[in-house]
Amino acid sequence: MEIELVPVSHLFGGTLSFDASIATEVFQAYDQWTSTVPNEITSSAAVVPFS
Image (cartoon, rainbow, N blue to C red; front, top):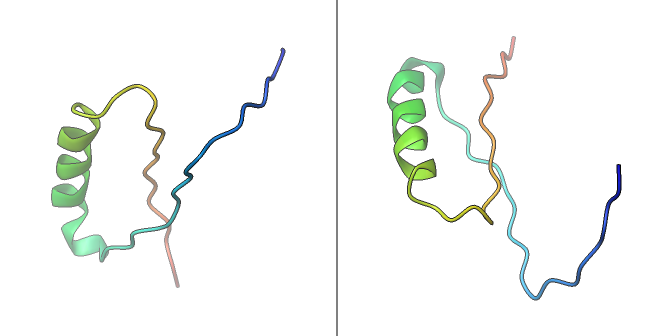
């Protein structure tokens, strides 16, 4: 594996959290959004249980 670092002018990051009761709607919106963004956009989605 080879990894190359390149300079970037802007970097954005953060977290959005939603109540589990609306998980279906959130993942549907996420699916719609990710189908419209360029390949340079990286994102992820996860369900994290809190007790």
